[in-house]
Every structure is written in C-alpha cells, then in structure tokens.
Image: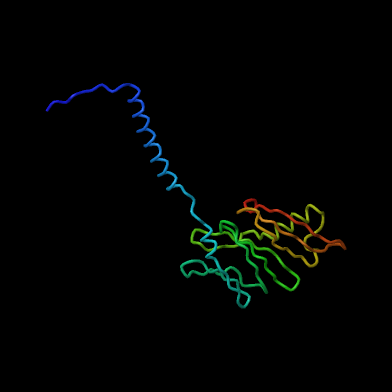
Length: 178
C-alpha cells in the first residue's frame, strides 16, 4: 500500500482548522446553555393553590403536599412572588387590624414566615421616620399592592395616630428584612 502525500495549500489548512474550531465551539456552547438553563418557574408558581378553612391558611403544592401557613386570622389573601420564592399574605386578624405576613420558600418546597414579623418592622420604620409611637396607632392596616420583582413588593400602610392619618405607599426589599 502506497500512501500518496499531497500537499494541501496553507489557505485550505487554515479554513479546515477554522471549521473544526468553530464546530467544537458551537457544540460546547449548546451543551453549556442546556445545562445552565434556568428552570421555568412559572409552571411551579401556577401549581400553588391555597385553601382557607376555620381560620387556617393551607398551602397546596405539587405532589399532593400541604403546608399549614397560619391558623389565627379571620381572612387571608395570598400573593405569590414572580418566581415563587416568597408569599405575601394580607392577614386580617380582627375586624380593624390587617397586616402583611411574608413567607419564604424552604428547600422542601414549603413556606415559613420570616422570623422577625414583617409588619412590625415596617410599622417601626414608619413610626421612627414620622416620630410617633407604634403602639398608639389606631386601626392599623397594611395592604398589598403588587410585586415589583421577585424580592421587592409594594404595600400601602394606613392608620391614625395623634389625630392625624397615616397613608404611605412603600416599596420594600425582602432581602433587607433577613
């Protein structure tokens, strides 16, 4: 067997090397983007449902799992963050007392209320800013307005103190509360 060696011009060698290099680059890019692709959380968020019975707020998540969120209110109105990592819940404790509780998703898929009550922290911040004592607020109410992004929400804080009304809209970062 005789191997005939033919000389390939330099320009064709460079073109061949370029094609091989480009092919390797494209194949690696496709593999990387598939591996690092962010999961579609909208389906997961859409699977979250709630039931309210006898003062309890129960979270129903996929695979027939349930988590008890709260047991102490007249009414609840939950709002799930865009990526499903947080839940803000308007909670009516008495006929004239309405707060917002914030729950964070854990590794098992259930949600737990923040250790430091979100509503207390918000009221203390407003009281300090406006110079009144939080305990003197009459008819304190908090209302959820909307999620700004996955970690910021907009709320409205209402109440009366020392014959003046409080009506503030705030954007609050949840990472700041940890």
